[in-house]
Amino acid sequence: MNWDTIEGNWKQFKGKARAQWGKLTDDDWDQVEGRRKQLAGKIQERYGKSREAAEREVDDWIDSI
Image (cartoon, rainbow, N blue to C red):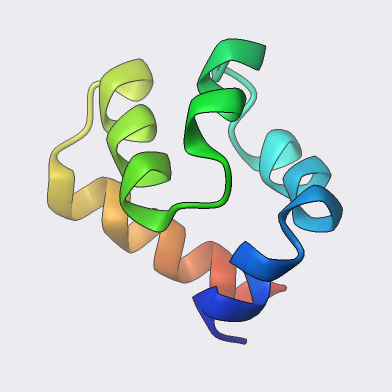
């Protein structure tokens, strides 16, 4: 699956993403609004990961859905 599909259907995928990254707040999700780099940035911030690790997590999540 590619990110364009996820971004276009963000409301459907948001629930799955919330299950994956429970530390993100409602405000975080509102700011992400389906943008991949924003999601990686929020994961980096909330989980204390490097940018590369956060982006890898996002890529792994995309591959799993």
